[in-house]
Amino acid sequence: QKEVEQNSGPLSVPEGAIASLNCTYSDRGSQSFFWYRQYSGKSPELIMFIYSNGDKEDGRFTAQLNKASQYVSLLIRDSQPSDSATYLCAVNPPLYTSGTYKYIFGTGTRLKVLA
Amino acid sequence: KAGVTQTPRYLIKTRGQQVTLSCSPISGHRSVSWYQQTPGQGLQFLFEYFSETQRNKGNFPGRFSGRQFSNSRSEMNVSTLELGDSALYLCASSLRGTEQFFGPGTRLTVL
Image 1 (cartoon, each protein chain N blue to C red):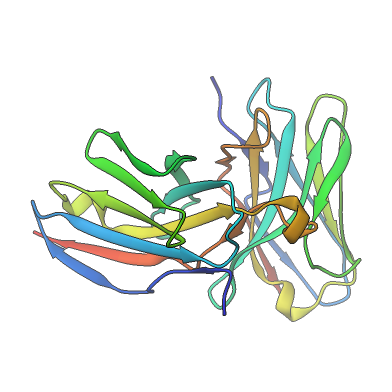
Image 2: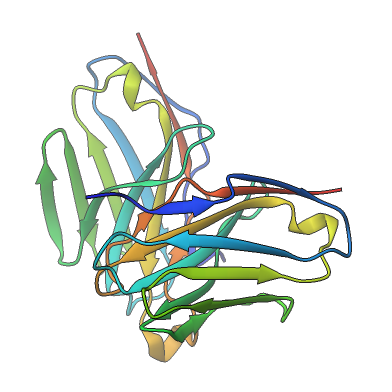
């Protein structure tokens, strides 16, 4: 089992719809969770982070964390063609289980917003 | 505030050579992390430096090394290059080691 799993996609949604991206993680003691957006040929850009159970909203983006079920999701409301990118989930596991790792990234979900 | 800068942006080397990549973090950030990104493996953590000390290290061979200077700039060195080292090398800076901000990356091609 991979430590951080994401569906590779592509996830296709029509313009104006809600895009829902999911990420599961294996280490129950993980502390903090991040969503990055990466356009083709570019470096990852931090768009959201969440540390506590529940929802965190920032503009059109909402991050949802459920530690009991070990998943974190990203909702993008009113999706635009410019949101088309790969979305990477990153998890910060606790040092007592991770040893040396600090951040573990999923392989990303490719989102395509259709005009 | 200027972002993270990385030099060079592109490199072509041959097997057996060594390479040094440079990263300048956001002003005031003391944590610098390095990642390797390949299509097959995704983003993999190499190491993190904080105040000139290596604080964390990923599962890469000893050919990969790094250091951080007193001004927080960091360098990463790869010796005895192999074809499989071809990748995008990303540097990320952080104020405390939490939220990380990535530079544009150095694309290394090993022939």
